[in-house]
Amino acid sequence: MHLDQIDHLPAQLSTLHPDALRSVFPNPTLIRLAGTRPAPLFLSVLLHGNETTSLDVLKHLQRRYETAPLPRSLMIFVGNVWATERGVRHMPDQPDFNRIWASGDTPAHALARQVHAAAMAACPFASIDIHNNTGTNPVYGCINALRPADLHLASLFAPLGVYYLNPATTQSIAFSKLCPAITLECGRSGDVEGLMAAVELVETVMRLDRFPDRHPVSHALRLFETLGRVDVAADCSFCFGPGHAALQFDSDMEDLNFRLLPAGTCLARTSEARLPLTVRDEHGTDLTRDFLTVNAGQIRLRRDVTPAMITTNLLNIRQDCLCYLMVERDIPTGDPSV
Ligand SMILES: [Zn+2]
Image (tube, rainbow, N blue to C red; front, side, top):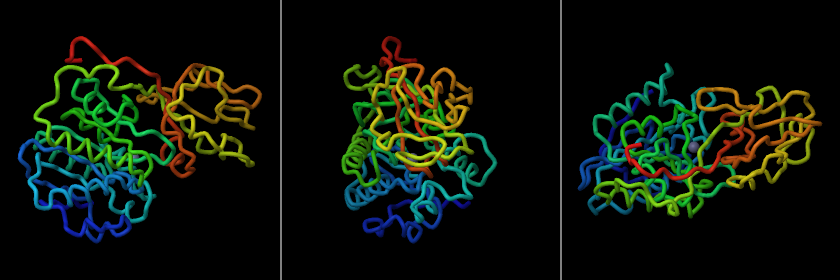
């Protein structure tokens, strides 16, 4: 898997459709652009091929800075060009490009190591990884450290933030060891609100000389913490709305995203005697019995939680997960070196 390296934004970007991406980026590509402030802002785009807001952010940068100087150097990783061409999250014979940023022996893992090493050598100012959801979700940022700078990144992007450590193999977890890092969840691909928020954050961070060293005030950000991720058993059929599957969810399940669900809420119905959902933390520890119970075919919550990233896209659920379960937490105060 070859990494192309270039020092400009190709002019053809302005009219580029995702399915023609490889006419401009035949391989994953690292783009280095020199700007007024030398420490680069690292941007990660198209790690998931069917999440195209990041391509629209690139188009904005190409238009805006075609002749004007960049306020800060940029280092841009264009990730899964093959999946983008096909409009899918990742190709069936490839790993998920946002799960390759820890140890692993596939060509994609080697590519991620090469990109990470290049970024480390450049001492990045911050890292922004741009994604979309397939389900109905508000615009929100995900961070992996509770440092003031990371919290500021989140509050600059949206009033909702998520702190997570699971999955542990994402780009933003790896880059949070190098610099303040955030994953942007920009709603569905094509949503204007998410695109505008992403563009505004990139523009703001390019012009920041430094991050404030105090935590943002708590009313600037509602922060949730992910406790576990929910998967459907691989051998269990499932559907949303009426159907004959062994596991049935309501068709309007996505409306539960970022809503506080009290203990006792029914999440699904099943014809199986077992519980065909699992909840695991970032270490793979099985937390299912802490969160879920099955009784008379009804799967109910055992405790109050707020779900996020519920999708009704069956392929995404098989390739990724059903959702994450979160609790709201206070913004840290006191010693900002936490
Ligand atoms: Zn994504």
